[in-house]
Length: 176
Image (tube, rainbow, N blue to C red; front, side, top):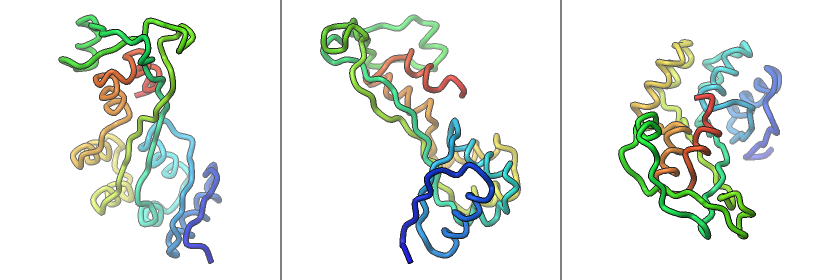
């Protein structure tokens, strides 16, 4: 009788139901779901026709992540984005860097990758909204009030630190 269970991927209602039952019987269950963000995972479960009360009772958190390319530290130079870019992303200032390309990064301006992630932690209020099939906009607003930062916000913070670029932000959060 394991304490932890890893389900490779939840692709269908049957697999989801097995994972939920394992969680409801006291097992810590980890799994993956192909989705664009944490809220899309909830949407996938809604569309599978599962008993959402059981799903949210079993669910503690949903983590969504993307990999962004890192600005090459060997050739990075301070960069001033144009006003339109700053306005579009709601940014006033930051430590913006852009790689010019060098032998370390093979001329790309990027070297290495790092995950940016959003974490949706479920509390009783969020569970109630999901179980009641509230509109996703309402669930998102409630999560934001509770301090959740979106993938886009996390990627934007990485841009402002000089870790990556606006181009990477747009590439990995295009669907948001």
